[in-house]
Each structure stands twice: as structure tokens, then as C-alpha cells.
Image 1 (cartoon, rainbow over the protein chains, first blue to last red):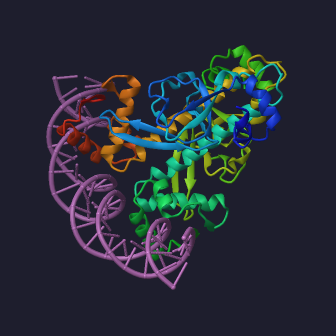
Image 2: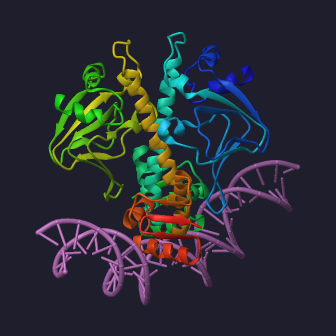
Image 3: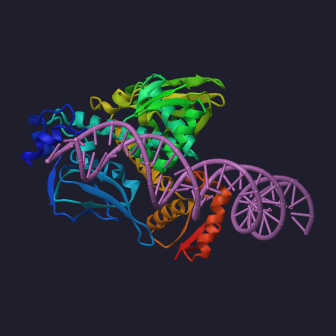
Length: 219
Length: 219
DNA sequence: ACAAGTCGGTTGTTTTTACAACAAAATGGG
DNA sequence: CCCATTTTGTTGTAAAAACAACCGACTTGT
């Protein structure tokens, strides 16, 4: 566990908490370290989760099988990232995905109850972690709502307009740089790259915007 | 304020808290009631939010204007529902939507800091509210991830398969009832109703499933 | 400098969707 | 029971997207 404290310190969950404080909190939060070999399941579909987990070594994949057995990769989890925060509600029911180690991995489990039931002031920084968790979920929430706003547009052009408009608002300028290349943007907006590239050029012809690499300017 | 305590009692935020306890917590949480006339702005795009709000009377609309001024309605908020929980993180930046009263409305504001900084044991049920808020955001998170999973599929058929598969898992049976009629399902999946209806029938012809009204059976 | 790889744009074809308009079935009052 | 309304399915057409294949510009490592 000791080896991973430095990694934990860099996570959102422990942001602003010193290594020393993390060390003392690991007890308070009843943290447990589990190791997985490549291919092992960390969670299986249908399980009930009562822990929030942080990946401290390796790489995980969230995958989903549909009724007819077709497998889809939903997401992957990199070192320092959290999983399970969407399942902490008792009403949230059972897990709908599998979580699999794509390489030898180590995961730290934190009991949800211990986190959100603030303990007897023994550890001063507990409340900091509660806040971090709060903010983290809240932010994720916001990002999801935004992304849903883009993707739920019907046409590629509308998706682009929704995304670029919002990026312009965020960066408070009609000229701004996006954090994606074309393929990543297409994946993010869930459209075909070449079709999107095509549409971008049409939009430029229509005088809506200009762009050069990652820099876009709305007109 | 007193008039709305019964309404608050039924919200997710105060679930499990008695009217008496809510009354005492309103002080502790520094709750404030604001009234809006039809057409008034509750929040404006660009504002910074430091409160979580609950609508206790009327009806609100979340709307967004893109760079070229086209207005889109993102969502509406009904009595008892919360707004602002996605903006509580200090890094979440400025509000990207307008929130407008579509009829005369009343909103209660709760200071975020007061909620997540647990107070000096004066109010026993504060921690209950913290938990409720946690669970509420967490659940919303889960629902958003799920919906994103459906909508990010490319074709209508894939969207339907993703949605129906998951619903089948949730209800733990290959035969289940969905909470939408066709139009609502189409809106939820962000596709055209008639095209979806058409696709459903094709899927039935292909032997993937059968359905009757809201009852679906996967084969 | 060169080979390999990445990235963005272009084009043509096929598939899928949106849209509109309508028909059939179901629903819900009065 | 009948009329009005809602819901669902059907069809044809036009628009849009996906897909595949390719090209040229640019990077990167050797």
C-alpha cells in the first residue's frame, strides 16, 4: 500500500491532502489493496458495489455485453482514476458492466459508508476527501450533461455547432483551441471522422467558421 | 418558506427527514426563498453558482443559445427537482445555460458550502442530507452514463439494442416493460419516431425480439 | 535523408436516417 | 356507443451519414 501513496496523492480524491495525511486516512477509510492478473475480472456484471475504487497500477477496461452476446468496450481506466462512484447509491442497483484488467493491475478499495459518514474528527482531512469526492462526481456530471447535449443533436453539423459554441463560451472567445485532433473529436461526438472532416469544410464554405489544425474561429 | 416544507420533504434531497427536522435545518443550511415572475431569469449564462436550488413552485426551463443565437431547450425542471448540483465544484466554472421561469415560480437556495461542510452536530440530520445529495448526484451520474451509452451508438438499431439489452438486464428477464411510449423512447434515444418504429419492426422480422405496446421480449 | 507512421482532407458508393404524409389501431371522455 | 384524440405502424423521398479507399502534408526516429 505504502508504494502507492504518492499515486493516491495525485488523484482527484486526495487532492490537497499530504502523503502523511493520506497514510493515516487509509486506516480511517478502511482502504484495501487488491491485485489482479491480466485478464482477471475486477467487477462482474450484476455485482453490487459498496466501494469506490482507485486504480494505482496497470490498466482496466469497462466492457459490456448485450443480450445477444456482442461485446462493447465502454471505457478504460488509467492509473489514478476512480471507478464506482456512480454506484454508491443504495438504489443504483447492480453493476451493468464488467471491469477487466488488461494488464497486471492493483486497485485500492474504499468503503463508501466510511467515506460519506464522517468519522469522529480523528482524521482532520476526512472532510476534505468528502468534498473532493463531491466535486469530482459533480464535475463528471457536468461533463456528461454537456457531452449528451452535443451527441443528442441529430446531424453532424449540429453536433459540431453545439460543441464548438460551448467551447467558445468556455474559453470566452470566438477563437479557441480544442483539446482533440480530428479523430478524437469524431470519437467524442460519436460520428465518422471523414464525414465530420467533410462537414467542417462545408461549414467553412458556408462562412460559419474558419479553422487551422486545433484552432477554431467562429464567425 | 413554511408553506413549502411539505414539498421539500418529498424531494430527494430531504428524503427520510421529517418536517420538524427540515424546519430546523433550513436555518442551519442558510436556506433562502426567491420568487420569480413568469419570464424572469433564475440564472444567466456565465454566472457563477454557489448554491444548490430546489424548485418548490412553478416550472423552470433550461435553455441554451449557441454562438449564432439559435436557442435550444435543454430541459425543464418540475416542482421538487434540483438544479445546480453539477456546478458545485469550484473548478466547474461558469454556467453554460440560462434558467428561466415559464410561470410564476419559487426557488429555495441552499449554500453549497454549508451543506458539504458538516456543521457542529447541532443538526443531527445534516449528514443525512449530505448522503442524499451524494446519492442523488451519483444516481444521476449513472443514468447519464447509461443514456450516453445508448445514444453514442451509430444506428437506430444499435441504439435500440443497447437500450433494450440494458433494460432486460435491469429487470432481470428477457421479457420486460419499458417506461416509455414510442415517441418518448424516440426522444430518449434521440432518433426519429417513425424511423425507430420502422426499425423495431425490421428487428422483429429479423427474429431479434417481439413486442406489444410497452412490453418487449428479447429472443 | 529516408522510411514509417500519423493526420487531415477528398471522393464515390451504399446504407441509414429524417421527414412528411397517411392509415390503422387503441384510448378516453361525454 | 360514438367522436375526438393519441398512439403506432407504413411508405416514399430526399438528405445525411457511414464506409472505404486514397492522397498529400507533416512528424518522428534512425
